[in-house]
Image 1 (cartoon, rainbow, N blue to C red):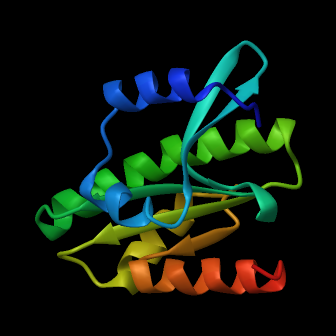
Image 2: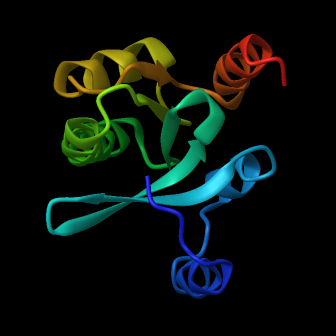
Image 3: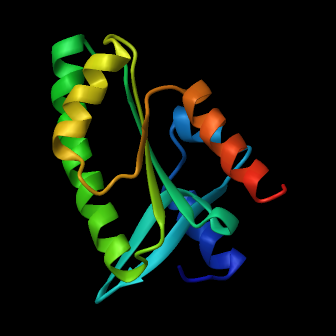
Amino acid sequence: MIVVSSKWMSQVRSLVPLTEQEEEVSHILLQHAVFPVANRMYVVDFSLPEQRAVIECWRSTSRRGVALTWVERNACYVDVKFRRIKGACPDLKCVALVEVVQADSAVVRVYVSAVMEHGDVLRCSMEELAGVVREWCGKEGA
């Protein structure tokens, strides 16, 4: 992970506004960490630097079929990002927070798990994510 100036991050954040879901998570995590890999820069939604973990979030409120198709496609993209970042930082834990309002979380897990090989943790609700964060931070004494 690379540390960048707060001025630069402010400019980046102003260009890439947080989604509603990211806004909810932002109160407890560092936003938009940047990882240089080869000749590219990968930006993740959130980082827990002390726990060596990153989080990517996405949510759909669309109809079930449309939402599941979109979630699966986005999981492929996020998996590529996780694979490349882990290539440079193998000890990093990669977490996916995937929320689909119109589908059961068990179904969402099936769709996402089928294509996401490099994610270490998959959570389908804010409550599930909060549990993971509390567990990791508790282990670190925070």
